[in-house]
Length: 297
Image 1 (cartoon, rainbow, N blue to C red):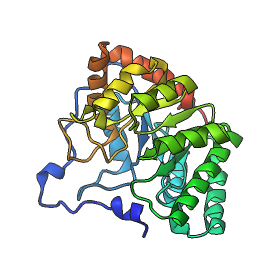
Image 2: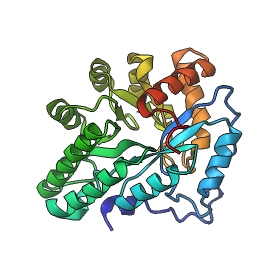
Image 3: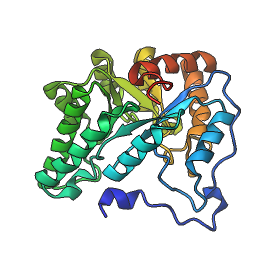
Image 4: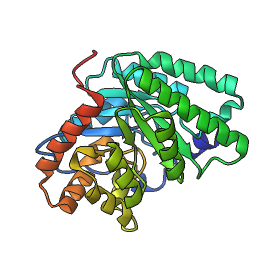
């Protein structure tokens, strides 16, 4: 088991009621999409089935979600479930913290070749999450495998004209230099945007998308709020990264796509626009990146 896999194990919190999924928020008047979620990851002793996730999404007027792979296995799951579920599209990739676990370029390339096979499916609309992570991955050999994996995933996105969902943790400069050197796909998304206004300005200039998660509501993250206000509204997306990054005031409990309304309303207030106006903008942006949820079934 790789370090990343260990970090994503379910929490053992059976005696703690605070680990339960939160109650439903008030439904959105204008529904929207969760740009990045992991429905297969269990983060509580009472996990929700995919069917239950979708039922709760419908109750708050969520329109759909991107189900994201982080391993070959979860990418296969994502592509398979999106192939028949109208509310889901898929993103497929080997996560940057999983790449070093393959130990050699040959083994890593074999896995990435399987990702490329998944990429041709009509409801796979993005390559991701891929990128660089200098927080968990260390060592020259491991970092070389991670960088190689990132570039190979970029090539797949370019070959099949798919969006690219980037995982960028403590690696802003290297992610940007890689994109500029090898050429960023036309639709490049910084998933769970974690940068400051300097990175936001670079994204703004290059037409890259910033996808904001529940951590924009955390008190310490003023840099995320400043970045949101800096970029053009046409570059903004919203996500959960569920079951992680649950927004305030629910922080510490498992996240899910049905909780997007909390983050959306927080962002709308910050931007001094209505929730409906923001949802309409997010829908336009999301469909520009991933296409229609009604196609490819």
